[in-house]
Length: 441
Image 1 (cartoon, helix red, strand yellow):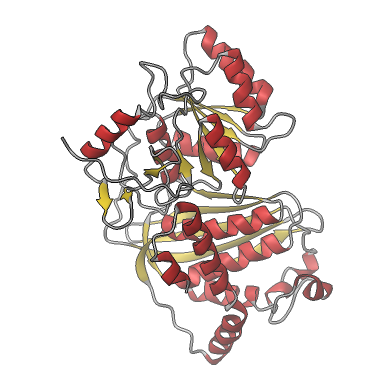
Image 2 (cartoon, one colour):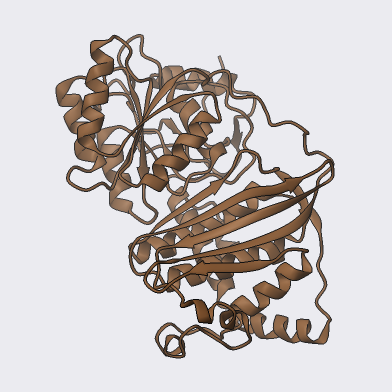
């Protein structure tokens, strides 16, 4: 039924909710599948089906619904696929997702406050194969050292009372351990009571034939630009800093509003305004929204494009971003999602082809300054253009085509916003307005 609903042309937000419901419905089969998989493993009848696939896309599809589960529990979910990790690999994506889902699901289940991070790195790589290292870190209840081996046994949990409190079959980690072993790796845990947990696992994969031997060069349109990153979470600052630096940009980090004021005012005094600022929406003392309003009052961010980092499931934050006229991304953010959003915020009409599913990235009428009736920034500023300029740009964009019958443009990361102007949504839109396609002159 969700597949049918997705085929009716839902708006961006409706599509988001339907996809989340679809994923959750599939997750309800997890208990039955666990039993079946365990039976197959015990009988030696479970086989892997390796195929070529995009690892970053696989991870992004896992993180999206998990982010909503984490946000519902008041947790921050972070994801970091390091730049050296190959994009195209040959392995069994279904079983790899099963392992990651089990570990992230357990982390969300047993963590009441703090954050959860998925990190993917390379342990070793030669011309045709690689050993990938996955880490799921959570600030949860922790596990006593004497229970580290027990939790990987069938129908076992670290504390028998957790079955009554949290539910579960006690088979998830057992199946994950068997799958990891079948994929040529190992799984282990580092944890202590009250100190959180770090679950590690490695897998052996083959490199797809199309995988380039060298990493792609940084985007020349972004290279050398200085970016201000404002986030109270040190882990998130580290991840964003690495993502930005990988594109040849220069990150400047600060943990809150006072640091942002100091950096902005110093840059304005030196005549070197930040071209872009990434601001977390949910910070203590002064949140990102109050920070933007104060920056505008002090008039120290007139030439700075702002990307707000919003938590999953916070619809009020999306509305506040639109009222302020700033763009926003929903965390966790992958490298390709961030790069495309930054390019669009800075006004680049040509954006690299996307290789991952995109999250919401709204671009309101005037992302660089306060909302006005013109629909654009100040004259001469980079960023989103006026409505007429946007229409002209859409006609020039080689990958932007009107989707017949859908009432919207089908473009990677571009959809109409509530005012009828383009934004960076990639199929996500809060507007139900459907304008006719522009006519080429």
